[in-house]
Image (tube, rainbow, N blue to C red; front, side, top):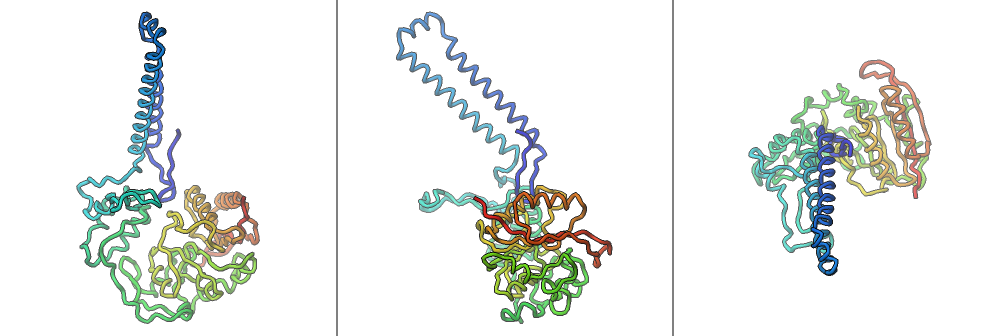
Amino acid sequence: MGSVSLKIGDGTARFRRASFCSSAVNILMLFSVITTNLFALYAFTSSPKDHQAHLVHNPHKNISLISEHVSLILREIASSQKKLARMEKELLGYETMDISRPNIASELKLFLQHHQLPLGKDSRTGITEMVASVGHSCEKSPDLLSQYMVYKISGPCPDDWSLGQKLILRGCEPLPRRRCFAKSVPKVGLYRFPVSLWKPVSEKILTWSGLGCKNFECLNKKKLSRDCVGCFNITTGYETQKFVTVRGRNDFLIDDVLALASGGIRIGFDISGGSGTFAARMAERNVTVITNTLNVDAPFSEFIAARGLFPLYLSLDHRFPFYDNVFDLIHASSGLDGGDKPEKLEFLMFDIDRILRAGGLFWLDNFYCANDVKKTALTRLIERFGYKKLKWVVGEKVDTAGSGKSEVYLSAVLQKPARV
């Protein structure tokens, strides 16, 4: 049966006891097969000779005896299969969360309980009970999860968004719902759309708790990521020039990319979109773009929303909450990197392909290639999907905000083929 890999939470969750689980299951399966066969052999050969002669003269009793033996064997096999399934779930640890632990918060216990439908079985779905939706990897952080679920019912929620994000980054996604009121920050001074796209955002309407920086001046001095250096300066910085001017051969103009589309571009998805500038440029062209982001070291979600854009608070370890073949364009950059887990990037690429329509564009924008091995692996992965290469540029540029060394980047515009 080999080792067990499960794509949940932090990419691929590998269980250290997978080899032990496989061995135990194999041994139990072998034992079950041997014992059931021995039992069958015994059932058909252990009768005395005189009794066998008696059965020859009583064919109806003979058939009845055989039926009883067969039924008994089938029951033994079914029982063994149930035991195997139960053992495997217990060894792998993904069946459920143990809510009997003494340190589990009472609210978490209540949320995780199965609740019977008041009118019985639902005729449309066939379900008889409501089951809470909580990420499998939450089991790995029971203390943090219990801390997150401690609050006053119908009172204000604790100021613990950073705790919730810590759980999300550990694969505990989705988080359980809570019965408390989230802290409200007055959104004073918001501009009407589309003026809001390039107007400065007030620091007073953002949540700074749990962050190292407490203002934009601090944020704009930091390299938050390869794609976000000074990205909160949307009035005078380079952010105002992105996608409409080029600084190197790896930069594509947004109008040039849109001109490559067949059937037009109406809706798009930006993966790890920084402060939302790509979505802003697309909004100017009457294209609706959803920006995927988390508040890692900065209030990205609130900032994007203040610009009049749509932030999606979701980690890249989570399956995208969209139906198949719905987006005309997907834009991604170095935030797509799966680190040292190539299977994580592979799962992510298949999910991107799932939500992109046939003929839609996948814009890979300045993806950082740490070495030739990573560049080759990414190239081979992309080629597996059979996308048409409309643009493909591998070039170097200097990391001016970091090491100052020359780095290799890949930029590409790819068109998804129609598959049958």
